[in-house]
Length: 184
Image 1 (spheres, rainbow, N blue to C red):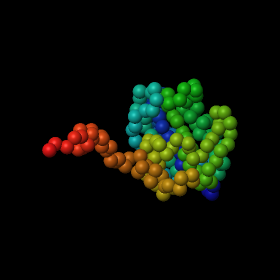
Image 2 (image 1 turned 180 degrees about the vertical axis):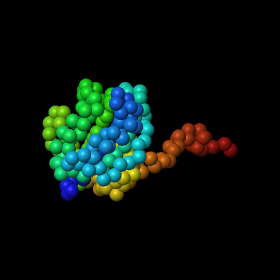
Image 3 (image 1 turned 60 degrees about the vertical axis):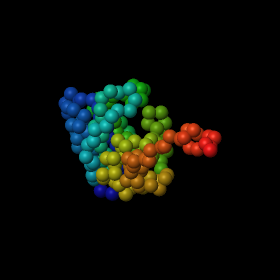
Image 4 (image 1 turned 90 degrees about the vertical axis):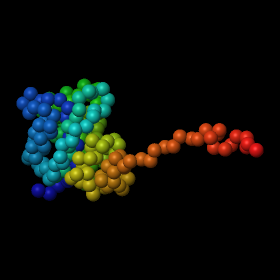
């Protein structure tokens, strides 16, 4: 099967009545993605992360490398259909709890902008560079894949988020640094 390659981020923080806990939802979604005109080439380990926004439940996150003959807008349509099949209801509230979230992060065609409304699509995903819960799993399976906008690899982007930063030193008050009157 020839076609395009896609890096897809998966997330879940709600039980599914049939599949069970979020980790099992991710596993079932990966199996469902490996079907028909799509083939899962690699799947990352599942990691658990703290939620963004108002949700209080921890997320199970993973990434897959997917090969598909479909163009990005068609893949987005299939991903949204799969989310609905798993019980996802788009309520308009960002970062709320969800059974399944699937996002196209990168594709081998470079940058892409298309669609409108609920089907609008921007590749690379606009926020993926700041999200360790996307980059850590992605680096495990596609570490050398380069962001077409920055030229940095997924592994480099991930390292930037996890790299320890030097502690900022507090300024020394003038009375302690010798700027006051000199004693004779």
